[in-house]
Amino acid sequence: MPTNAARKSARLSVAPMMDWTDRHCRYLHRLLSKETLLYTEMVTAPALVRGQALHLLAFSPAEHPIALQLGGSDPEELAKAAKLGAAEGYDEINLNVGCPSDRVQSGTFGAVLMKEPGLVAECCAAMIEAVDIEVTVKCRIGVDDQDPQTVLPEFLSRISAAGVSRFAIHARKAWLQGLSPKENREVPPLDYGLAVAMKGLFPALHLSINGGISSLDQAEAFLDAGMDGVMFGRAAYHNPADVLCVADRRIFGSDAPDAAPEAAVQAMLPYIEAHLTTGGRLHQITRHMLGLFAGRPGARAWRRTLSESATRSDAGPELVLEALACVQ
Ligand SMILES: Cc1cc2nc3c(=O)[nH]c(=O)nc-3n(C[C@H](O)[C@H](O)[C@H](O)COP(=O)(O)O)c2cc1C
Image 1 (cartoon, rainbow, N blue to C red):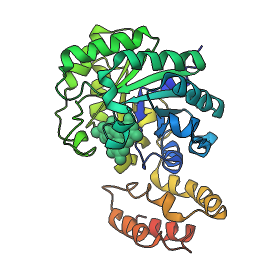
Image 2: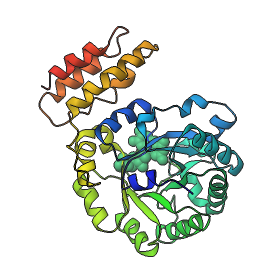
Image 3: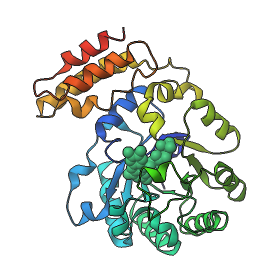
Image 4: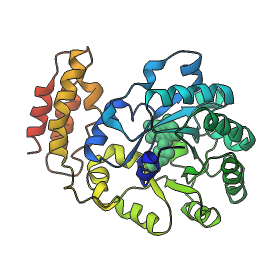
């Protein structure tokens, strides 16, 4: 039976974001919220299974609950990749059916799979058979000239028949030709109404809504409207304090004091030390910390101090303390 840790935390999640939600970013986010579900960047099944790139799976135990997002479209290969993820200790395996980038299209991964629900169902069934943790899907409402009103319910119906009962819906179409991945996160209009309507059609499914959500007020409104979860992408990355520091109290009902970004910075120092000791560079971690004080006095000096100097080969924790002094 799947564990419930990830499902419970899916009331609020930070989306998979390539190059952004790496292990350093997730370690920081976990200091800000104990409850929020964190997703990895997409890792492709071929990289794990054919490329033996097992280092892509590494994470800190502190990051739980954590979901591994996989990309791929070969059921057998995805099953093997899911097994590797489960063995590594992930709490959930998520299949990417939303990412429109060219590289991803060429391997038949991501959003193009919205056109092949039968294959997605096979992939999910194979992964469910292979692992004991929950298998979930992140999808769009449709692609290209598909009609989301018919495609999305059909997709949810077919994939849930294969055993998936939790989905994150990025509430806009993806255009597979002519738009960059960035434009595909901005240009196709959002249709929140359709995503919310799916909850009425599929009350037994756990449905999270994603796309353009920028505040916890907005997230709470979606939960009040019946959604089971809200997934934040860019807002959580660029302004993690406003989303994550208060999430445990506001979204999960915790009575613990809210996390403070200053305390998170202090708590990052030993992690940074350990990273530098193993040959890592400061900016690999601090690039994810630039938004920590967004909107607060000193935020600009914090960002500037880190972004100007953290790439220096001798930069270390003292630079982070110097930057922190700008906001205190
Ligand atoms: C830099 C970046 C990388 C992304 N990489 C992935 C990815 O690897 N897998 C995926 O399913 N979605 C990816 N996305 C899409 C996000 O998960 C999310 O669906 C999208 O940003 C919409 O949410 P938002 O408006 O809250 O940012 C990425 C988004 C960004 C900004």
